[in-house]
Length: 85
Image (cartoon, rainbow, N blue to C red; front, top):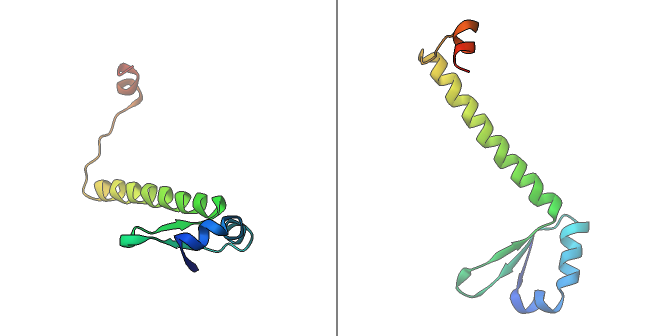
């Protein structure tokens, strides 16, 4: 992980982009009032998004299992399901 100030990255943007992509480096761009930003590769970003989506899905499954354990389920036979159409 590298931290650089805004002025430094502005003058060397391509270099830091290359580091983020080619070396999987996370680049923190420090700004006034601690309004910092992070530069990462698209691959790293997509990985983070997938992890977040998987976490949401797993949480949904956990809630569903808890409902089953509490007996909060509904049972329907084929005829009842067909009647719902």
